[in-house]
Structures are given as structure tokens and as C-alpha cells.
Length: 288
Length: 189
Image 1 (cartoon, chains in turn cyan, orange):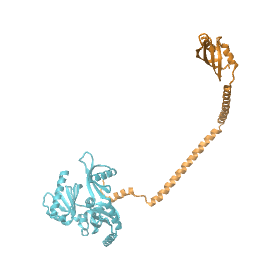
Image 2 (image 1 turned 30 degrees about the vertical axis):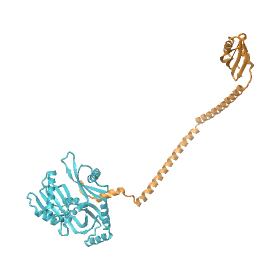
Image 3 (image 1 turned 120 degrees about the horizontal axis):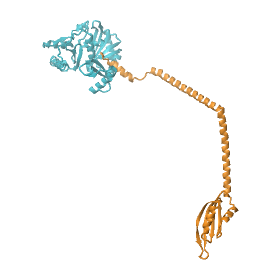
Image 4 (image 1 turned 30 degrees about the horizontal axis):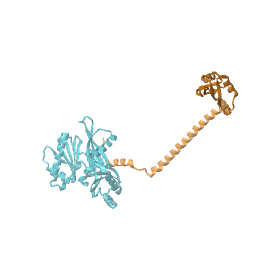
């Protein structure tokens, strides 16, 4: 069993889970507590309270994977010439700093999404993620307060991609749009032939929208147009996971015959669906 | 291909570069550096001592060589000779000085002048200063001074004979021609 802590701006979610050989996750415990990660003050009493709650959920792990919500990080896709890893890293840092006009107090990591072979030279599509050092220090303080050692600090995008790779989510070979719908943000992953082509994160507030489903539809439409124009592909399947209420409502409202809308079946990801909050599914990819 | 993002690993790597050395590191590294410095310094000193000893041996061998000893003695002898010669030269210079300054009228000089003096020329004054001689004369004939100068030039006892010309003195009946001639005495005197 391993422990995953998903950190949002105002909430911590603890997931005690393990991977199973058949490509699914077994979740033993899952709970959320409010916590302001951006607060500059660290209260030892809160840490002690969290430890007590963890003990109540039989969480006795000494180390944990941290998964950061996209609102805490900056991410951008780049198309860069294919280079060795040690040469690519400084280039990525430079590109990201210039593209987003960042100061020096950011740390960066990257993920190679795939290769572009339609250019004269081999080009990598790279997802670069940046995190402010200050937030990392707060995470360190939190983990120290919880008496936990940090195993890794990942982003929700990378864990989602890992989740898709590890599990049997039915992507197929047709152009597929995978949506992660949450109340405060939406993530869009375009897959084609098991390879991710495009990745977008949008911050929204669905509960404040008069018609959240139409709002989601509009953004999905925009995404499909971008995919069509950029990759010359028609999205045939849309898979949705995340907040189950929005997922169900969105899929039921879709009537287009040429595009299928499906909610990701939880049993394709989990051995036991009773012990998990549907919003933390993507964080499980931290274990893969 | 990189498949996993781990910002904590990157953070640790970045931090590692700027981490100050721990006390343990200082406790271990500083004595090692000091030890290395001492060893290097000791080695250098030993090498210098060895080099100096070697140079000393070479020099001693050179000094102990018989041919060098002979050359050295020869040089000392030459030096002594040179010093005695220098002393002798100095004594001669002093003697010349004394002889040169001695105001002695040599009858030989007058005899020599007398011998070449034409009949119509009379010597007024002869000034002898070391080897420089000035003859002041009077002549009843205008050709007398030139004749005297010519005779002096022809005499081997004199050299650098310079005729300074003459002046006419007195009236038309008793005309005298006066002048002077400078000359040097040669080694005969």
C-alpha cells in the first residue's frame, strides 16, 4: 500500500492505494480535509489534527506521493528538437521562463508526449511543468508536520497520463477526447492511436454557471475544432471522468450520432469502487 | 522517453547545488586538506634540500679538481703581478709629475736655440713650462723671424713649432721686428 496526497489550493485528499497486476488500483482509504496550502503560516496543531485523522483511517505510512492540482502549477506544451535529456533540460527551463515571463524562483520538469515526424527534423512534443519554489517549501513543511517523507511531487496531468497507460480505459485507435471534469477545472486530453496529441487545462467554476452542461459543450466544441485544424482529425469518442454528477449529465445530454460520449467505467480502473471519491481518480496514476 | 514528472527530484537537484557543506563534511575535508598541504610542503622542502645538496656536491667537486686549483693559483699570481704593475705605473706617473713641475732651466735648450739663431735675430725671453717653450725675439731684418722658425722646425730637438707672426717696431732708421714662436721639446731633452 502507498499513500497519495492530492493537494488543491484549499483541500488535501489522502488516498491509500495499491496497484494490481491486472492493471487496476485497489483503494483502501480515501478522505479529504480542508487545508490552505498557499497560507504562509504553518500551524503545528493542524498537522497534529491531520495525523489523528490519518490514524483514524488506518494510514500509518511514513512516505507519500504528492499530486498537485493544475491550479498550483504552470504547464505549457512545446515542440522542441529531439535532444539528449541533459541538453534538453536547460533548454526547457529557458523556453518556459521566456514563454511565461517567469522569475528564477521556479522549478521545472517535463514530460515527452510524443514525436512529430511531419517536420524535416525529428521534433519532440514536450509538456513542461513549473512550480514556484515557495509552494514546494510549503509542501515540505506540511509533509514534515505530518511526519511523512516525500516520494515524489507529480502533477495531475502526468498522473492522468500514467493512469491511462496503466489501466484499461477503452481509448481505441480513433481520435478520442478524454475529459476530466471537476467543479473548478476541466482537463482535456486528446488521444489518437494510444498516443496523447494535445493537452489543455481550463479553470472554471461550474457551480456558478447557469447552464454548466452547455458551458462544457462549448469548450469541448472549441477543443474539437482545434484538434481538427491542428491535426486534421475528427474526434469520434469522448470519454469523461471526474465529478460523477457532471459526467452523467453531460453524457446524457449529448445527441450527436457521429460522436460517442461515455463515462469512464470505474471498474476499469478500480477493484473496489466503494472507497473512493470520484474526483481523485486521476491522482491514482502517481503509483504507476 | 521520459514518462513521469517529479518536481521534488528536480527541486532536490537544484537545492543540492547550493547546499552549504555540513559540519561532518567540514570535519572530514578540512583535516584532509591540511594534511595534503603539509605533505606537499614537506615534499617540496625535501626536494629543495636534495637539489641544494646535489649543487653543493657539484661545486665541491669542481673546487677539488687539480686543474681548477692550478688555474686558480695562476689567476692569483696574475692578479698579484697586475697589482705590482699598477703600483709601478702609479710611481712613474708621480715621478713624471715631479719632474714636469721642476723649474729648471736647461742650458741644453738655450744652446740648441742659440745654434739655430740667425745673425740678425736676438732672443728677448725664453719661457719653459714643462715641455712647452715660448721664444720671444727681436730681429733687425724682416726675414729673420721666418728664418728662425724654419731653423727650429728643422732641428730634431723641437717639435710643433708654431710661428705666431711679427710686429714692426721703431722708426724707419732703426726698425725692429718682434714676435714669438711656440714649440715643444722632444725626448732628447
